[in-house]
Length: 244
Image (cartoon, rainbow, N blue to C red):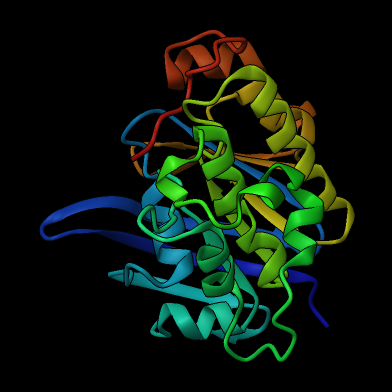
């Protein structure tokens, strides 16, 4: 049986007449961490949208495990174990923390406890009755990331989860990602802190103008040369990757 959790084969996609992704091949193996890097406009967010079912590709195939899901809706992919944590928190600001957590519980799960999320993010425990919009930015991101624990996914895709957060909160967020990975959850990570993403990843894809220009292990990447050539920044810059 294949250990590939997500596979994109020859995927092209875009919006209207604008093509963003061009003939992209990508694999995320069970229990692995894959970093997806690229400049602003490279196609990173578009790729996550295709993989999660929010955007249908114009060409190519998407597979979850060995099942083709190219035309499957996002809820079908969620049931198959796919979880997307989008840029911009992805929470309901006008609802309480408790209500947000309850909504993140999959309807097909009989266990309606969200204790596992509170264990991962104890800062939320005393704020269950507060409106989500009144939380700090870091707490809002923790609330968004709770879905990765409550949905019990086998694949979590994360789009710039550290954006706009204080360094101490970024450390907490990355620690939560390490916990997910250590428990066998596959991660596909789009991240502005490129060096941190490389440190935790098993495999790296580099996008440039919608095409994969590098695929390999992090130690195979000539980091500064590639970052200068495709991202226009040195490796240590915290803002080398932006959304698409």
